[in-house]
Image (cartoon, rainbow, N blue to C red; front, side):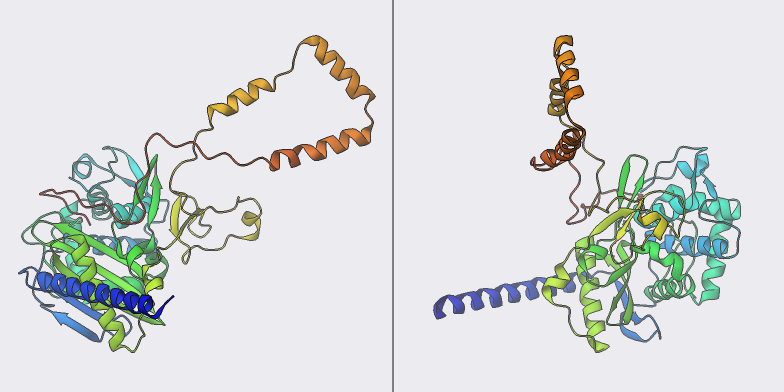
Length: 415
């Protein structure tokens, strides 16, 4: 490569970086100018505030409410009132909640573990209401208990009126309170907190994807929750670790999820820099976490979960021998075999009786050594054939590279 070509490449990279910084700065200026905007970033271990803007002004939490619903559910599990396999019954009232929802029919039930995954990934309003009803009898009573417990944690400016975050003018919180709740979920329930890093989980015939794009887009992110209603804008609480330092941030009032996520990334970058953590290389920051399918022997029976490879627990020796090799990004059911296989099977049918008789005579006269050699060579011939491409499914899977744009709605509480 000539000196001129190298110089041009360097100028191109510099120009691209400058354009990116200008765009990022413009997006940051847009979100901070919104009247619903608030943010905070803290050291998860000490609570030291690294940056804050309107952190004590009340905002609507939207689906960040489900962080408190999960905190109450985790407490019930810790106290022995529930287990991962305890059924959560869905009433007609809970089933009537608007999206986002899991869609369990009235009178149906799911396990506690499925409820946890539905709240974290799908941000399911129907399941949030069902959890509240199962813990406190009805959702109104559960909201009062939620508020009391939140105040005892130090969330002094938070009031809950429902378990889901659906619109209610009296349901309010602050960025500081939500960052505190994020820290308490991490410290009080380290075993259950790992669920917040789940990127996908299978429910029935559906593969449900986590709304939290930070898990895929920001290196070091391990949770926790997103939220959106019209009154709040796009909210998020994020936990990220780098070089042994964990930060928890909260952003309220984004006009879109990309704007919200980009601003959160900027705040976390600034926070890590303040903590003396070096920047992550561009290639590492842009790397998409891989996912694997498999059983979790710790959690026991339940829905098939897909977790990041960093979170995948090793199988016990007795299961490792019986489990097939894990396949990366197994997000779709196995494809149906091609029709060509049927034709091949048909061509392998035995010929007429006369041919069968001749074959039987030949086999009878063949030596045992020749028969053994023929059996040994058969799989080798099959192994040398090029593998056929899997048949395409009737419906193409959704891309795993970037989260889908959220649908517009008036009364939705989701990510």
